[in-house]
Amino acid sequence: MVALHRVSDVDDLISQAALKFIDTVARIQAAGGGLHHDGIARVVLTGGSAGIGVLHELARLDFAAQQQGENFPAQRIDWARVHVFFGDERNVPVTDADSNEGQARAALLNHVDIPDQNIHGFDLGAVSMEAAASAYEPELKEFAPNGFDLHLLGMGEEGHINSLFPHSSAIREQEELAVPVHDSPKPPSERITLTLPAVNRSERIWLLVAGEAKAEAAKHVVEGADPEEWPAAGAHGRAETILFLADDAMSEL
Image 1: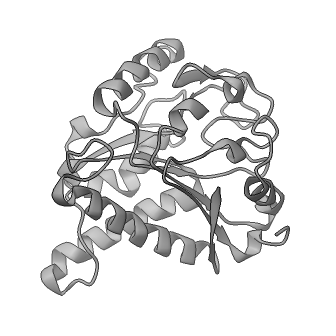
Image 2: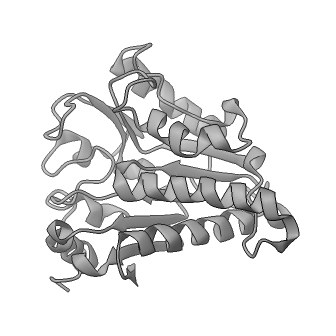
């Protein structure tokens, strides 16, 4: 069941999601917590304006915590004990402006003390999409064998998450954890995406949604629609699924 977390606007969404992210990861890192009971947080990042906005805010809060030390009201993440994965990626090098990993590095990862080996990208631009998809599954099984502690998701107007679009072969995939997408209706057309079986290995799933055009899709998520029609409705965290929803996307609820 989806828990609705109402926020006033996209800026409020970014602020609240970032603070909750810090609290969640800090609790995982305390006393050997998390799905793997090793105090290491395994998180999946998302692109989009809200997703990248959260990453910018995390970088800002981390810098503020460094400067203020014990006087800073929020906890600080030990980034050496975070492994980062990506929900999808465009078929471009990381240096390309369209790269989700590149955007995440620019917004957050280049500004915190996370070891590069803890950043698990798809290496697109260096290998074929088919090879990258095939290689990502064993990487997931090595570094996140029990699944993810947290999966952030954006959502499109038609309800797509990652690069899982309505009526696509990717949304119907039931076995593979990562698949290539050659016909994305949203450019660029070539991508790799985690599938619903991969997404739903997550302990927590947070959907970050703002914008009037997404109101209908948000309604279908809350109502539990068919994922073939509304892919975001197929995302179910093992412990929680939270829809962070801005007021401008509430008109259908």
